[in-house]
Image (cartoon, rainbow, N blue to C red; front, side, top):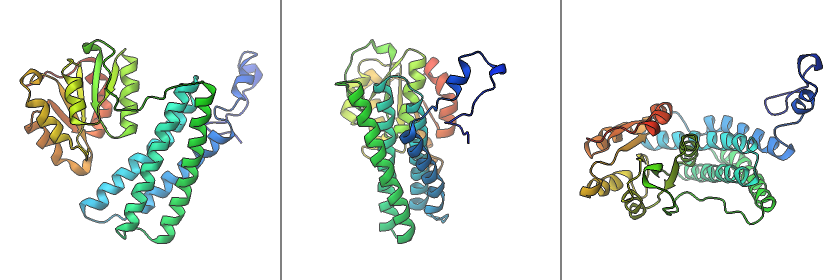
Length: 283
């Protein structure tokens, strides 16, 4: 039976001689296909985990779990579509990080009595299997490529001209991966920053654009924004922030603190290519 990752044969009359051989080759091997299906299964289960009740905490956990579980599926598929082992390993590692994040959210749900023990056990068992399989896949790609360094977001290293860089103060690995791919298509490098000190050091080298995750917890984005605007030399730096729909107030707060533009995540995704091509002018 054919599906998205194991296409069925193409009639020979409708394609060149080599096409049927290519079309019959699965885009994912057995283990990749298995973990992909488990990830899809977990994402469907995630929709049942957090109760639809009022309160900031349930809404935050629901949004976090949804984003992280979607990230697992997308990064497995992205890794399977890559050709080089280092690229594959990087996306499998990102997917594994998102899966680990899902495990942490599950434990928080149980600790706050927002999920039953039976449902928590079912989801936890599934996510543990996913993490184990992704660990094996990532390690296998590393062995295939020899002594390969898989990039860990957040390392500060100025190895390229300032105007060809985008600095990202982003915790969400799915969004960071998306930003990197969009920037790469435009010939731009993305430099991650994990601390305010790293962010300031990177921004003093005149990047093209700074992207802030306004949902960031530690250190918070508003602390980073205040530090950036507190330096006269960085006053004209274009800064774009994005936020979750459950934290809409953070957008207005960021704009008042000097963020050039602040927008919901969905709008940010749609406008990302435009923002990279033509950063907004700072006020």
